[in-house]
Image 1 (cartoon, rainbow, N blue to C red):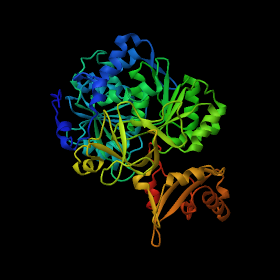
Image 2 (image 1 turned 90 degrees about the vertical axis):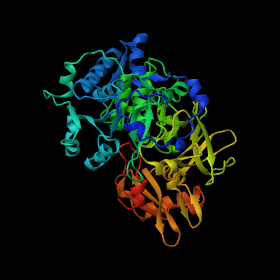
Image 3 (image 1 turned 135 degrees about the horizontal axis):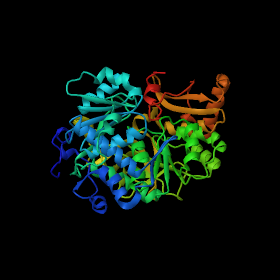
Length: 539
Protein backbone atom coordinates (compact mmCIF):
# COMPACT_ATOMS: atom_id res chain seq x y z
CA UNK A 1 0.00 0.00 0.00
CA UNK A 2 1.11 3.52 -0.73
CA UNK A 3 0.89 6.29 1.87
CA UNK A 4 -2.68 7.48 2.27
CA UNK A 5 -3.82 11.05 1.83
CA UNK A 6 -6.60 10.39 4.30
CA UNK A 7 -6.67 11.76 7.83
CA UNK A 8 -9.59 9.46 8.69
CA UNK A 9 -8.15 5.95 8.43
CA UNK A 10 -11.33 3.97 9.15
CA UNK A 11 -11.60 2.46 5.66
CA UNK A 12 -7.96 1.43 5.45
CA UNK A 13 -8.01 -0.01 8.95
CA UNK A 14 -11.08 -2.11 8.14
CA UNK A 15 -9.87 -3.62 4.89
CA UNK A 16 -9.45 -7.40 5.12
CA UNK A 17 -5.95 -8.67 5.96
CA UNK A 18 -3.83 -8.44 2.82
CA UNK A 19 -3.24 -12.20 2.81
CA UNK A 20 -6.99 -12.60 2.16
CA UNK A 21 -7.04 -10.21 -0.79
CA UNK A 22 -7.48 -11.59 -4.28
CA UNK A 23 -4.57 -11.54 -6.70
CA UNK A 24 -4.63 -8.40 -8.81
CA UNK A 25 -3.33 -9.29 -12.24
CA UNK A 26 0.08 -7.57 -12.45
CA UNK A 27 0.02 -7.40 -16.26
CA UNK A 28 -3.35 -5.65 -16.16
CA UNK A 29 -2.20 -3.11 -13.60
CA UNK A 30 1.00 -2.50 -15.55
CA UNK A 31 -0.98 -1.98 -18.77
CA UNK A 32 -3.36 0.46 -17.09
CA UNK A 33 -0.36 2.32 -15.60
CA UNK A 34 -2.30 4.61 -13.29
CA UNK A 35 -0.25 7.07 -11.24
CA UNK A 36 0.41 6.30 -7.58
CA UNK A 37 -1.20 9.59 -6.57
CA UNK A 38 -4.57 10.25 -8.16
CA UNK A 39 -8.17 11.26 -7.61
CA UNK A 40 -10.69 9.35 -9.71
CA UNK A 41 -13.12 12.28 -9.92
CA UNK A 42 -10.35 14.57 -11.15
CA UNK A 43 -9.46 12.00 -13.81
CA UNK A 44 -13.09 11.80 -14.94
CA UNK A 45 -14.30 15.41 -14.99
CA UNK A 46 -11.38 17.87 -14.57
CA UNK A 47 -9.29 16.14 -17.22
CA UNK A 48 -12.23 16.12 -19.64
CA UNK A 49 -12.65 19.87 -19.27
CA UNK A 50 -8.89 20.41 -19.62
CA UNK A 51 -9.00 18.35 -22.81
CA UNK A 52 -11.51 20.72 -24.38
CA UNK A 53 -14.81 19.00 -23.63
CA UNK A 54 -16.14 21.79 -21.40
CA UNK A 55 -18.93 22.91 -23.73
CA UNK A 56 -20.03 19.41 -24.69
CA UNK A 57 -23.10 17.70 -23.16
CA UNK A 58 -22.27 15.61 -20.12
CA UNK A 59 -25.34 14.77 -18.03
CA UNK A 60 -28.87 14.80 -19.42
CA UNK A 61 -32.35 14.50 -17.94
CA UNK A 62 -35.71 14.68 -19.73
CA UNK A 63 -35.81 18.39 -18.78
CA UNK A 64 -32.19 19.62 -18.68
CA UNK A 65 -28.70 19.10 -20.08
CA UNK A 66 -25.49 20.00 -18.23
CA UNK A 67 -22.22 20.53 -20.03
CA UNK A 68 -18.90 19.26 -18.71
CA UNK A 69 -18.11 22.80 -17.51
CA UNK A 70 -21.38 22.92 -15.58
CA UNK A 71 -20.90 19.48 -14.04
CA UNK A 72 -17.39 20.42 -12.90
CA UNK A 73 -18.67 23.67 -11.43
CA UNK A 74 -21.42 21.93 -9.45
CA UNK A 75 -19.12 19.17 -8.24
CA UNK A 76 -16.58 21.75 -7.05
CA UNK A 77 -19.25 23.70 -5.20
CA UNK A 78 -20.45 20.54 -3.47
CA UNK A 79 -16.88 19.71 -2.49
CA UNK A 80 -16.58 23.18 -0.93
CA UNK A 81 -19.82 22.72 1.02
CA UNK A 82 -18.68 19.36 2.31
CA UNK A 83 -15.38 20.77 3.58
CA UNK A 84 -16.42 24.29 4.60
CA UNK A 85 -19.89 23.69 6.04
CA UNK A 86 -19.81 20.05 7.11
CA UNK A 87 -16.18 19.71 8.11
CA UNK A 88 -15.40 16.75 5.86
CA UNK A 89 -11.96 15.29 6.44
CA UNK A 90 -10.32 13.07 3.80
CA UNK A 91 -11.47 9.52 4.41
CA UNK A 92 -14.87 10.45 5.89
CA UNK A 93 -17.78 8.39 4.58
CA UNK A 94 -20.60 10.34 2.90
CA UNK A 95 -23.99 8.69 2.39
CA UNK A 96 -25.79 9.75 -0.79
CA UNK A 97 -29.53 9.16 -0.90
CA UNK A 98 -31.38 9.95 -4.11
CA UNK A 99 -32.62 8.57 -7.37
CA UNK A 100 -30.42 9.09 -10.42
CA UNK A 101 -30.44 12.82 -11.05
CA UNK A 102 -28.06 15.71 -11.59
CA UNK A 103 -27.50 16.42 -7.91
CA UNK A 104 -26.79 12.77 -7.13
CA UNK A 105 -24.23 12.58 -9.94
CA UNK A 106 -22.44 15.83 -9.13
CA UNK A 107 -22.50 15.01 -5.41
CA UNK A 108 -20.80 11.66 -6.08
CA UNK A 109 -18.04 13.48 -7.93
CA UNK A 110 -17.85 16.21 -5.29
CA UNK A 111 -17.39 13.69 -2.48
CA UNK A 112 -14.39 12.11 -4.20
CA UNK A 113 -12.89 15.49 -5.14
CA UNK A 114 -12.94 16.44 -1.44
CA UNK A 115 -11.28 13.16 -0.46
CA UNK A 116 -14.44 11.62 0.92
CA UNK A 117 -15.67 8.06 0.40
CA UNK A 118 -18.97 7.85 -1.47
CA UNK A 119 -21.64 5.50 -0.10
CA UNK A 120 -24.58 5.60 -2.51
CA UNK A 121 -27.87 4.05 -1.34
CA UNK A 122 -30.90 2.73 -3.18
CA UNK A 123 -33.81 5.21 -3.14
CA UNK A 124 -36.24 2.53 -1.98
CA UNK A 125 -34.28 1.49 1.10
CA UNK A 126 -36.22 1.73 4.33
CA UNK A 127 -35.08 2.80 7.79
CA UNK A 128 -33.88 -0.64 8.89
CA UNK A 129 -31.73 -1.05 5.78
CA UNK A 130 -30.40 2.50 6.01
CA UNK A 131 -29.46 1.93 9.63
CA UNK A 132 -27.40 -1.08 8.55
CA UNK A 133 -25.54 1.07 6.00
CA UNK A 134 -25.08 3.89 8.52
CA UNK A 135 -23.59 1.58 11.12
CA UNK A 136 -21.54 -0.67 8.85
CA UNK A 137 -19.85 2.21 6.99
CA UNK A 138 -19.75 4.53 10.05
CA UNK A 139 -21.41 7.30 8.08
CA UNK A 140 -20.42 10.82 9.18
CA UNK A 141 -22.10 12.99 6.53
CA UNK A 142 -25.26 12.49 4.46
CA UNK A 143 -26.62 14.30 1.40
CA UNK A 144 -30.28 13.35 0.99
CA UNK A 145 -32.99 14.22 -1.50
CA UNK A 146 -35.72 15.96 0.50
CA UNK A 147 -38.33 13.73 -1.14
CA UNK A 148 -36.68 10.77 0.59
CA UNK A 149 -36.18 12.50 3.92
CA UNK A 150 -38.62 10.56 6.09
CA UNK A 151 -36.79 7.24 6.19
CA UNK A 152 -33.39 8.86 6.64
CA UNK A 153 -34.57 11.23 9.37
CA UNK A 154 -35.67 8.27 11.46
CA UNK A 155 -32.13 6.86 11.50
CA UNK A 156 -29.88 9.85 10.75
CA UNK A 157 -31.21 12.87 12.58
CA UNK A 158 -29.90 13.18 16.09
CA UNK A 159 -27.08 10.68 15.61
CA UNK A 160 -24.01 12.05 17.40
CA UNK A 161 -21.47 13.37 14.90
CA UNK A 162 -23.66 12.72 11.84
CA UNK A 163 -24.38 15.80 9.73
CA UNK A 164 -27.10 15.81 7.04
CA UNK A 165 -27.91 18.24 4.26
CA UNK A 166 -31.08 17.92 2.21
CA UNK A 167 -31.56 19.06 -1.36
CA UNK A 168 -34.53 19.75 -3.60
CA UNK A 169 -36.67 21.46 -0.95
CA UNK A 170 -35.70 25.12 -1.47
CA UNK A 171 -34.90 25.54 2.23
CA UNK A 172 -32.51 28.28 3.31
CA UNK A 173 -30.00 25.71 4.56
CA UNK A 174 -30.42 23.31 1.61
CA UNK A 175 -27.47 21.94 -0.29
CA UNK A 176 -28.34 24.09 -3.31
CA UNK A 177 -28.41 27.35 -1.33
CA UNK A 178 -25.10 26.52 0.27
CA UNK A 179 -23.67 25.69 -3.16
CA UNK A 180 -24.73 29.13 -4.40
CA UNK A 181 -22.39 30.67 -1.82
CA UNK A 182 -19.47 28.39 -2.68
CA UNK A 183 -16.70 28.73 -5.24
CA UNK A 184 -16.84 26.94 -8.56
CA UNK A 185 -13.18 26.03 -8.32
CA UNK A 186 -11.68 23.51 -5.89
CA UNK A 187 -8.25 22.12 -5.09
CA UNK A 188 -8.81 18.38 -5.37
CA UNK A 189 -7.51 16.09 -2.65
CA UNK A 190 -4.94 13.96 -4.44
CA UNK A 191 -5.28 10.52 -2.89
CA UNK A 192 -3.27 7.36 -3.11
CA UNK A 193 -4.35 5.12 -5.98
CA UNK A 194 -5.22 2.51 -3.34
CA UNK A 195 -7.20 4.80 -1.05
CA UNK A 196 -10.84 3.75 -0.84
CA UNK A 197 -13.06 5.85 -3.14
CA UNK A 198 -16.43 4.16 -2.55
CA UNK A 199 -18.17 1.63 -0.38
CA UNK A 200 -20.82 -0.28 -2.30
CA UNK A 201 -23.40 -2.49 -0.64
CA UNK A 202 -24.62 -5.68 -2.28
CA UNK A 203 -28.31 -5.98 -3.08
CA UNK A 204 -28.83 -8.36 -0.20
CA UNK A 205 -30.71 -11.10 -2.03
CA UNK A 206 -29.25 -13.79 0.25
CA UNK A 207 -29.07 -11.97 3.59
CA UNK A 208 -27.90 -8.65 5.07
CA UNK A 209 -26.21 -6.45 2.49
CA UNK A 210 -22.43 -6.81 2.43
CA UNK A 211 -20.17 -3.76 2.13
CA UNK A 212 -17.46 -3.84 -0.53
CA UNK A 213 -14.59 -1.34 -0.76
CA UNK A 214 -13.09 -0.08 -4.01
CA UNK A 215 -10.04 2.07 -4.66
CA UNK A 216 -9.58 5.16 -6.80
CA UNK A 217 -7.70 3.04 -9.34
CA UNK A 218 -10.62 0.59 -9.49
CA UNK A 219 -12.98 3.36 -10.63
CA UNK A 220 -10.85 3.89 -13.72
CA UNK A 221 -10.06 0.21 -14.24
CA UNK A 222 -13.69 -0.73 -14.90
CA UNK A 223 -13.92 2.09 -17.46
CA UNK A 224 -10.87 0.82 -19.28
CA UNK A 225 -12.02 -2.83 -19.27
CA UNK A 226 -15.62 -2.94 -20.58
CA UNK A 227 -16.59 0.21 -22.46
CA UNK A 228 -13.16 0.97 -23.92
CA UNK A 229 -12.30 -2.36 -25.59
CA UNK A 230 -15.86 -3.67 -26.12
CA UNK A 231 -18.07 -0.67 -26.90
CA UNK A 232 -15.37 1.70 -28.20
CA UNK A 233 -17.35 4.81 -27.22
CA UNK A 234 -16.77 8.23 -28.74
CA UNK A 235 -17.70 11.67 -27.38
CA UNK A 236 -20.84 11.57 -29.52
CA UNK A 237 -22.22 8.51 -27.72
CA UNK A 238 -25.09 8.73 -25.25
CA UNK A 239 -25.54 6.19 -22.44
CA UNK A 240 -28.84 5.31 -20.75
CA UNK A 241 -30.09 2.64 -18.39
CA UNK A 242 -32.17 1.75 -15.39
CA UNK A 243 -29.89 0.93 -12.47
CA UNK A 244 -29.41 3.41 -9.61
CA UNK A 245 -25.89 4.55 -8.76
CA UNK A 246 -25.94 2.42 -5.60
CA UNK A 247 -25.95 -0.60 -7.92
CA UNK A 248 -22.41 -0.43 -9.32
CA UNK A 249 -23.68 -1.63 -12.71
CA UNK A 250 -25.54 1.70 -12.89
CA UNK A 251 -22.71 3.78 -11.45
CA UNK A 252 -20.38 2.55 -14.16
CA UNK A 253 -22.82 2.70 -17.03
CA UNK A 254 -24.40 6.08 -16.27
CA UNK A 255 -21.58 8.13 -14.76
CA UNK A 256 -18.11 6.64 -14.89
CA UNK A 257 -18.11 5.20 -18.41
CA UNK A 258 -19.49 8.23 -20.29
CA UNK A 259 -17.26 10.69 -18.44
CA UNK A 260 -14.17 8.59 -19.05
CA UNK A 261 -14.70 8.92 -22.81
CA UNK A 262 -16.10 12.44 -23.05
CA UNK A 263 -19.57 11.11 -23.85
CA UNK A 264 -22.87 11.87 -22.11
CA UNK A 265 -25.48 10.00 -20.07
CA UNK A 266 -29.22 10.24 -19.57
CA UNK A 267 -30.24 10.15 -15.89
CA UNK A 268 -33.74 8.86 -15.14
CA UNK A 269 -35.32 9.03 -11.71
CA UNK A 270 -37.79 6.39 -12.83
CA UNK A 271 -36.86 3.79 -15.41
CA UNK A 272 -40.02 2.13 -16.63
CA UNK A 273 -40.00 0.61 -20.13
CA UNK A 274 -41.88 3.59 -21.60
CA UNK A 275 -39.62 6.14 -19.91
CA UNK A 276 -36.43 4.42 -21.09
CA UNK A 277 -37.72 4.14 -24.65
CA UNK A 278 -38.81 7.78 -24.62
CA UNK A 279 -35.33 8.79 -23.42
CA UNK A 280 -33.72 6.77 -26.22
CA UNK A 281 -35.79 8.65 -28.77
CA UNK A 282 -35.40 12.11 -27.17
CA UNK A 283 -31.65 12.01 -26.58
CA UNK A 284 -30.60 9.72 -29.45
CA UNK A 285 -29.20 7.16 -27.03
CA UNK A 286 -26.55 4.84 -28.48
CA UNK A 287 -25.82 2.47 -25.57
CA UNK A 288 -28.36 0.95 -23.17
CA UNK A 289 -27.51 -0.84 -19.93
CA UNK A 290 -30.23 -2.72 -18.09
CA UNK A 291 -31.41 -6.11 -16.86
CA UNK A 292 -33.07 -8.81 -19.00
CA UNK A 293 -36.44 -8.20 -17.36
CA UNK A 294 -36.56 -4.65 -18.71
CA UNK A 295 -35.31 -5.60 -22.17
CA UNK A 296 -38.11 -8.13 -22.31
CA UNK A 297 -40.66 -5.54 -21.17
CA UNK A 298 -39.42 -2.94 -23.68
CA UNK A 299 -39.45 -5.28 -26.67
CA UNK A 300 -43.18 -5.20 -27.51
CA UNK A 301 -43.23 -1.40 -27.02
CA UNK A 302 -40.12 -0.51 -29.03
CA UNK A 303 -41.95 -0.21 -32.35
CA UNK A 304 -43.73 2.89 -31.02
CA UNK A 305 -40.46 4.79 -30.46
CA UNK A 306 -37.56 5.88 -32.63
CA UNK A 307 -34.70 3.66 -31.44
CA UNK A 308 -32.67 3.94 -34.63
CA UNK A 309 -29.81 5.69 -32.78
CA UNK A 310 -28.93 2.57 -30.79
CA UNK A 311 -25.53 0.97 -31.40
CA UNK A 312 -25.52 -1.70 -28.68
CA UNK A 313 -27.28 -2.87 -25.55
CA UNK A 314 -25.53 -4.38 -22.54
CA UNK A 315 -27.39 -6.87 -20.34
CA UNK A 316 -26.34 -7.77 -16.83
CA UNK A 317 -27.73 -8.34 -13.35
CA UNK A 318 -29.05 -11.83 -14.06
CA UNK A 319 -28.98 -14.54 -16.73
CA UNK A 320 -29.97 -13.34 -20.22
CA UNK A 321 -32.50 -15.77 -21.73
CA UNK A 322 -32.13 -16.47 -25.44
CA UNK A 323 -35.76 -15.52 -26.00
CA UNK A 324 -35.13 -12.04 -24.55
CA UNK A 325 -32.01 -11.44 -26.65
CA UNK A 326 -33.69 -12.69 -29.82
CA UNK A 327 -36.87 -10.71 -29.18
CA UNK A 328 -34.91 -7.48 -28.72
CA UNK A 329 -32.80 -8.10 -31.83
CA UNK A 330 -35.82 -8.81 -34.00
CA UNK A 331 -37.65 -5.73 -32.77
CA UNK A 332 -34.76 -3.23 -32.79
CA UNK A 333 -32.08 -4.77 -35.00
CA UNK A 334 -29.64 -4.45 -32.09
CA UNK A 335 -27.88 -7.42 -30.54
CA UNK A 336 -27.52 -7.48 -26.78
CA UNK A 337 -24.07 -7.88 -25.27
CA UNK A 338 -24.35 -10.42 -22.49
CA UNK A 339 -22.18 -9.72 -19.45
CA UNK A 340 -21.73 -10.67 -15.85
CA UNK A 341 -20.28 -8.69 -12.98
CA UNK A 342 -20.64 -8.29 -9.26
CA UNK A 343 -20.57 -5.60 -6.62
CA UNK A 344 -17.50 -7.33 -5.20
CA UNK A 345 -15.66 -6.86 -8.51
CA UNK A 346 -17.22 -3.39 -8.96
CA UNK A 347 -18.48 -4.10 -12.48
CA UNK A 348 -18.32 -6.60 -15.34
CA UNK A 349 -15.56 -9.17 -15.80
CA UNK A 350 -17.05 -11.39 -18.55
CA UNK A 351 -18.78 -10.14 -21.68
CA UNK A 352 -19.58 -11.36 -25.17
CA UNK A 353 -17.44 -9.54 -27.75
CA UNK A 354 -19.53 -7.80 -30.42
CA UNK A 355 -20.00 -9.93 -33.49
CA UNK A 356 -19.30 -13.14 -31.59
CA UNK A 357 -22.70 -13.71 -30.01
CA UNK A 358 -23.42 -17.32 -29.14
CA UNK A 359 -26.83 -18.30 -27.77
CA UNK A 360 -26.66 -18.72 -23.99
CA UNK A 361 -22.91 -18.03 -23.74
CA UNK A 362 -21.96 -15.15 -21.44
CA UNK A 363 -18.69 -14.46 -23.20
CA UNK A 364 -14.98 -14.11 -22.53
CA UNK A 365 -12.95 -12.44 -19.79
CA UNK A 366 -12.66 -8.72 -20.39
CA UNK A 367 -9.17 -7.35 -21.10
CA UNK A 368 -7.10 -7.58 -17.93
CA UNK A 369 -9.25 -10.35 -16.40
CA UNK A 370 -8.72 -14.10 -16.18
CA UNK A 371 -11.40 -16.69 -15.48
CA UNK A 372 -11.42 -20.42 -14.71
CA UNK A 373 -13.83 -23.11 -13.52
CA UNK A 374 -12.95 -24.82 -10.23
CA UNK A 375 -14.15 -27.80 -8.22
CA UNK A 376 -14.64 -27.69 -4.45
CA UNK A 377 -10.90 -28.28 -3.91
CA UNK A 378 -9.94 -25.37 -6.20
CA UNK A 379 -8.73 -27.67 -8.95
CA UNK A 380 -9.31 -26.34 -12.47
CA UNK A 381 -11.96 -28.35 -14.30
CA UNK A 382 -11.77 -29.44 -17.94
CA UNK A 383 -14.02 -27.99 -20.67
CA UNK A 384 -17.76 -28.66 -20.30
CA UNK A 385 -17.50 -29.56 -16.59
CA UNK A 386 -19.75 -27.43 -14.39
CA UNK A 387 -18.03 -25.83 -11.42
CA UNK A 388 -17.40 -22.61 -9.53
CA UNK A 389 -16.54 -19.53 -11.57
CA UNK A 390 -13.34 -17.85 -10.38
CA UNK A 391 -12.02 -14.55 -11.73
CA UNK A 392 -8.99 -12.31 -11.27
CA UNK A 393 -8.21 -8.93 -12.72
CA UNK A 394 -7.39 -5.32 -11.89
CA UNK A 395 -10.31 -5.19 -9.42
CA UNK A 396 -11.38 -7.62 -6.73
CA UNK A 397 -13.28 -8.30 -3.53
CA UNK A 398 -12.42 -6.48 -0.32
CA UNK A 399 -15.24 -6.69 2.21
CA UNK A 400 -15.50 -4.05 4.89
CA UNK A 401 -14.68 -5.61 8.26
CA UNK A 402 -15.94 -9.09 7.32
CA UNK A 403 -13.14 -11.63 7.41
CA UNK A 404 -15.50 -14.61 7.42
CA UNK A 405 -17.18 -13.62 4.16
CA UNK A 406 -13.84 -12.58 2.69
CA UNK A 407 -12.50 -16.11 3.19
CA UNK A 408 -15.51 -17.55 1.35
CA UNK A 409 -15.41 -15.16 -1.60
CA UNK A 410 -11.64 -15.20 -2.14
CA UNK A 411 -9.77 -18.52 -2.28
CA UNK A 412 -6.22 -19.02 -3.49
CA UNK A 413 -6.25 -15.49 -4.87
CA UNK A 414 -9.37 -16.06 -6.99
CA UNK A 415 -12.70 -14.25 -6.57
CA UNK A 416 -15.41 -16.93 -6.40
CA UNK A 417 -18.49 -15.14 -7.65
CA UNK A 418 -21.13 -17.61 -6.43
CA UNK A 419 -22.00 -18.66 -9.97
CA UNK A 420 -21.87 -22.14 -11.51
CA UNK A 421 -20.39 -22.01 -15.02
CA UNK A 422 -18.71 -24.19 -17.60
CA UNK A 423 -16.24 -23.26 -20.31
CA UNK A 424 -15.80 -24.65 -23.80
CA UNK A 425 -12.67 -25.39 -25.81
CA UNK A 426 -12.82 -21.96 -27.45
CA UNK A 427 -12.58 -20.10 -24.16
CA UNK A 428 -16.22 -19.05 -24.00
CA UNK A 429 -17.89 -19.16 -20.60
CA UNK A 430 -21.44 -20.46 -20.21
CA UNK A 431 -23.76 -19.74 -17.31
CA UNK A 432 -25.30 -22.70 -15.53
CA UNK A 433 -26.87 -21.32 -12.35
CA UNK A 434 -26.18 -19.31 -9.28
CA UNK A 435 -24.38 -21.68 -6.95
CA UNK A 436 -27.03 -21.10 -4.33
CA UNK A 437 -29.78 -21.41 -6.95
CA UNK A 438 -28.67 -24.84 -8.10
CA UNK A 439 -31.59 -27.24 -7.70
CA UNK A 440 -30.71 -30.73 -6.51
CA UNK A 441 -33.72 -32.99 -6.97
CA UNK A 442 -33.55 -36.76 -6.47
CA UNK A 443 -29.82 -36.63 -7.12
CA UNK A 444 -30.05 -34.55 -10.29
CA UNK A 445 -28.40 -31.13 -10.56
CA UNK A 446 -30.87 -28.87 -12.35
CA UNK A 447 -30.29 -25.34 -13.55
CA UNK A 448 -33.28 -23.14 -12.83
CA UNK A 449 -32.13 -20.81 -15.62
CA UNK A 450 -32.42 -23.62 -18.17
CA UNK A 451 -36.02 -24.33 -17.17
CA UNK A 452 -36.80 -20.61 -17.25
CA UNK A 453 -35.56 -20.43 -20.84
CA UNK A 454 -38.13 -23.01 -21.94
CA UNK A 455 -40.99 -21.45 -19.99
CA UNK A 456 -40.25 -17.97 -21.34
CA UNK A 457 -40.64 -19.30 -24.88
CA UNK A 458 -44.33 -19.96 -24.16
CA UNK A 459 -46.41 -17.12 -25.61
CA UNK A 460 -48.57 -16.90 -22.50
CA UNK A 461 -45.65 -16.29 -20.13
CA UNK A 462 -44.57 -12.74 -19.37
CA UNK A 463 -42.04 -13.52 -16.62
CA UNK A 464 -40.96 -16.51 -14.62
CA UNK A 465 -38.48 -17.64 -11.98
CA UNK A 466 -37.58 -21.24 -11.22
CA UNK A 467 -36.19 -22.30 -7.84
CA UNK A 468 -35.79 -25.41 -5.76
CA UNK A 469 -38.26 -25.82 -2.90
CA UNK A 470 -37.60 -28.25 -0.06
CA UNK A 471 -39.34 -31.63 -0.43
CA UNK A 472 -39.17 -34.61 1.91
CA UNK A 473 -39.12 -37.21 -0.84
CA UNK A 474 -36.80 -35.59 -3.40
CA UNK A 475 -34.77 -33.14 -1.34
CA UNK A 476 -35.99 -30.33 -3.56
CA UNK A 477 -38.56 -30.06 -6.31
CA UNK A 478 -38.36 -27.77 -9.29
CA UNK A 479 -40.88 -24.99 -8.70
CA UNK A 480 -41.83 -22.34 -11.23
CA UNK A 481 -43.36 -18.99 -10.33
CA UNK A 482 -45.15 -17.61 -13.39
CA UNK A 483 -46.51 -14.21 -14.37
CA UNK A 484 -48.92 -14.61 -17.30
CA UNK A 485 -49.76 -12.02 -19.92
CA UNK A 486 -53.41 -12.83 -19.22
CA UNK A 487 -53.89 -13.82 -15.55
CA UNK A 488 -57.28 -15.34 -16.35
CA UNK A 489 -55.50 -18.21 -18.15
CA UNK A 490 -54.00 -19.51 -14.89
CA UNK A 491 -55.24 -22.96 -13.96
CA UNK A 492 -54.73 -26.68 -14.36
CA UNK A 493 -54.81 -26.60 -18.15
CA UNK A 494 -52.08 -23.96 -18.32
CA UNK A 495 -50.00 -25.82 -15.73
CA UNK A 496 -50.15 -29.05 -17.75
CA UNK A 497 -49.33 -27.18 -20.95
CA UNK A 498 -46.24 -25.59 -19.38
CA UNK A 499 -45.07 -28.84 -17.79
CA UNK A 500 -45.48 -30.72 -21.05
CA UNK A 501 -43.52 -28.04 -22.88
CA UNK A 502 -40.57 -28.45 -20.52
CA UNK A 503 -40.73 -32.25 -20.68
CA UNK A 504 -40.68 -32.15 -24.45
CA UNK A 505 -37.91 -29.58 -24.73
CA UNK A 506 -35.31 -30.61 -22.15
CA UNK A 507 -34.71 -33.67 -19.98
CA UNK A 508 -38.07 -34.64 -18.44
CA UNK A 509 -36.65 -34.80 -14.90
CA UNK A 510 -36.17 -31.03 -15.09
CA UNK A 511 -39.85 -30.18 -15.46
CA UNK A 512 -41.45 -28.02 -12.74
CA UNK A 513 -43.44 -30.33 -10.48
CA UNK A 514 -45.08 -27.29 -8.94
CA UNK A 515 -46.22 -24.09 -10.65
CA UNK A 516 -47.54 -21.02 -8.86
CA UNK A 517 -49.08 -18.02 -10.62
CA UNK A 518 -48.25 -14.52 -9.35
CA UNK A 519 -49.27 -11.02 -10.31
CA UNK A 520 -45.60 -10.00 -10.18
CA UNK A 521 -42.27 -11.52 -9.22
CA UNK A 522 -40.57 -10.12 -6.13
CA UNK A 523 -37.58 -8.00 -7.17
CA UNK A 524 -34.82 -6.01 -5.58
CA UNK A 525 -34.58 -2.29 -6.31
CA UNK A 526 -31.95 -3.15 -8.93
CA UNK A 527 -34.45 -5.28 -10.88
CA UNK A 528 -33.11 -8.69 -9.87
CA UNK A 529 -35.62 -11.39 -9.06
CA UNK A 530 -35.49 -12.25 -5.35
CA UNK A 531 -35.26 -15.99 -5.71
CA UNK A 532 -34.50 -16.34 -2.01
CA UNK A 533 -37.95 -14.91 -1.23
CA UNK A 534 -39.53 -17.43 -3.60
CA UNK A 535 -37.62 -20.33 -2.06
CA UNK A 536 -38.57 -19.23 1.43
CA UNK A 537 -42.26 -18.80 0.61
CA UNK A 538 -42.21 -15.02 1.13
CA UNK A 539 -44.70 -14.32 -1.64
